[in-house]
Length: 156
Image 1 (cartoon, rainbow, N blue to C red):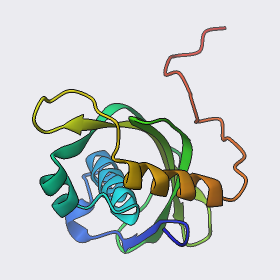
Image 2: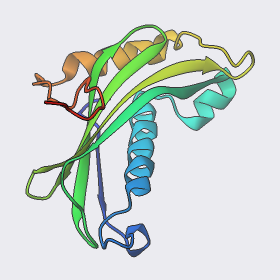
Image 3: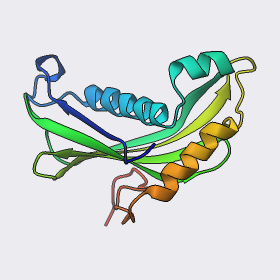
């Protein structure tokens, strides 16, 4: 991965809900696609996963909706590796509009899983090295309030 992974797209008509903005399920779908794209950027392609009997699962995820996207809005998503170890990668994704305003955030912990045993496994060394390289090349990250946010209704 020579540069930061960024996903770009435009809100499609089929993504719009009855509130005339992008359906919440579409955010999850987009963020999931971005996570897959990120792992492909560190060479964990579907073909690699098939030949090496490894896959990735989500362990935990949290999304925060900050602003709306409507039909034909352009947007982009940036991926930040917050932390990682031999088996897991803690990612923080931020979706922006073309005015660079934050639209939504997605925090997820992904884990390597053996396709044979269906249990966690370490990432193959070449993949782990690419994750480490991507982590090391990142720009400084000011952790937003959404990172590690616990869901709840504040009481006074």
